Amino acid sequence: MQDVGVGLYPSMSLVNHSCNPNCVIVFEGRQLLLRSVREIQIGEELTISYIESLMPSSERQKHLKRQYCFECNCLLCKTQEKDVDMLAGEEQAWKEIKDAVAKVGDPRSQEEWEQVLAMCQALLNNNADRLPDTNIYLLKMLDCAMDACINLRRWEEALLYGNRTLKPYRLYYSSFHPLRAVQMMRVGKLQHTQDMFPQALETLKQAYTIMKVTHGADHSLVQDLMKLKEQCEADMRAQ
Image (cartoon, rainbow, N blue to C red; front, side):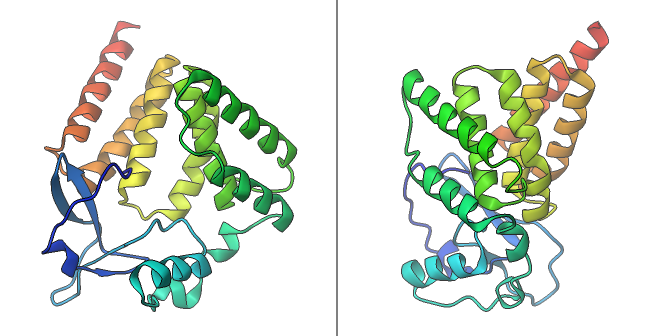
């Protein structure tokens, strides 16, 4: 679910946008897969999201206008249903975190990751009472801190940050969304590293329930998930 290149898929370019789509696009190598994520009625249009949906309505509209030259009139944009949760907390605090996340860039070395983690820890500690985890910019910082800990092999800390992201991911991403499934898989792997086998197994099962819809049972990522789930079950029996 990360950008690694550009491809041209003429038939898929015909699919229109919605901020609350009934389909998602995932890749298996260079193969593009269009997967439905909820029941679709006969004659209902297939839609995908052209942009990252974890933005308030005004930001989504700005991105769509700039890049695709249209205004979205989907129900989510009309009602601005989740904007209050997305921007909950003190405005000055989330603006500071928003700016900090935007400056992270692409860390490569251990030293750079340590700098990123130190920045995240300081801001998260300073704003603990000013922003809820559902604030999207705090959520992005939690993800950033989790990534830094994983790259620094600090598994226990990574799990602490990862656990805090699960509730907001459940709030903002539909029941069957690939990003939610991947995040749960990452948290399950971290739980496994901490020998939390029952918790890991439950998290991985939930990830699989979503991923078999969003990716399909034959997808390589789902196969990796099944291997991890089987390893977790074996570790539980060995205890």
